Image (cartoon, rainbow, N blue to C red; front, side):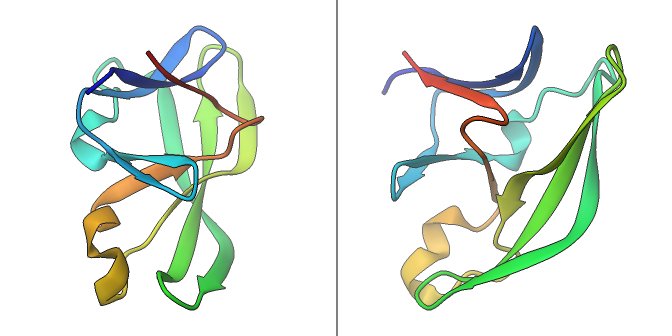
Length: 104
């Protein structure tokens, strides 16, 4: 499987060799988040959406410490995905256009 990365500018948010792809979005395992250097914060947003087959998605704002940039609702996850979407439980996806997601 190719390598997937999520970046904001030069800051790598996540990278993984194994991930899930649903509806054209890359869902990164939480363990692939690259914040060991404390370069960004995921801040729980008040936003949520509902998908009839995946369940309720919750959102994160991403604060990039180096630039002071906060990107609203830049990531989402399903805390309790429905049975049809169990494969994305414990994963985070990022909005294209807000976060650069690449698969190589």
